[in-house]
Length: 473
Image 1 (cartoon, helix red, strand yellow):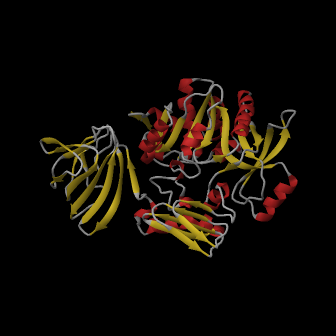
Image 2 (cartoon, rainbow, N blue to C red):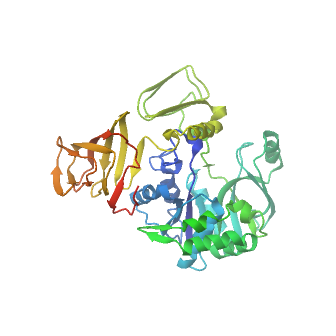
Image 3 (cartoon, one colour):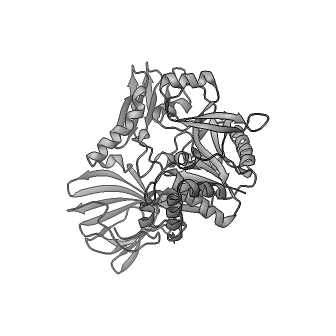
């Protein structure tokens, strides 16, 4: 049996302003109609003895991931919530421990949630090869056959072949990201592969090796899982224990130390979408090398990536640039500087700008909201509530609210009253009054909310009852 382990802990800061901390790139539709994590799970279809996936993610993303899996009819074996990022080695250790409860001799297929793979058959063939090696107690990594002297990836140096066709090779060395000259030498020598960050091994073998090389990490991972709690469809790790867990990657914690590491070389149209330039590379370009998305008009423009979310973006006389428009931010960068977008995010965090963290459209388990206008003492939002969903029973200490229904039907609780509102009807929620909004209809409920008061922050919420298990804010 193979259990996929989907690692979804990244923040994707190099793809700002589309990717934000509260909605990172793996939860976005960047290269297809599906999101990247949906593509990651869907491309496994057609493999043999495949169990439901285990997903490891930031607890802030839990409802979005659960909803995106529901959209593609996937019921995960577990969604494990990390209270802190501790890199990939502890995440896989906890997944291995959880998988062992399902099947003691299970093989894990560890996949980042945000990669692009264009040749699915080559991907499946490599997994079949890796599975045979994993069943022979090898720890498998997948090496991408390089087609350019890439300096943005680490490399794997292969040693002796372990089969007649050279499909399984001993790992001789993991190599850090090289400079251009060194990368060119790797291509000339041969036997060097890009490190894909994908792995395959028996859960028991990984745990055995981790116990040998970093028992403190294994113990903390085990205790954090055992002393955690189940919350709806999620597994919450023990926060205090996991905070003390050493953080490290699978490469450093295990793969560079074990004598059982092997590499399966594969050419499958792989890209980790680590920058806007990478997204340009995998996109469908016009006859002048431009990749565009949304309402875009280009004249005398070459080899550029132009993305519009909300309005017309017109570009004249530009080449080798990235231009990305969202409702609350615009990015303009030369492609050569695309890796430095993360520095903008760090600057925004340092100056406490919400644009670093929060997307313009905020996703909640019940639906979405987005700010239309905001000034001193008032704020206007557009809210969508999914059919059958309802917000928590709550109150606010610093604001009152007006609700105007524009689509669908709302069931409203305000104090000790319950009533129905239809399109073009409205109601007033006084400051300090308990209230709740519910969509009992069959279509999405849409409304305009006007907030007025001395403080309009999202943390002015006291919850009395919540079907999604959220605590008071």
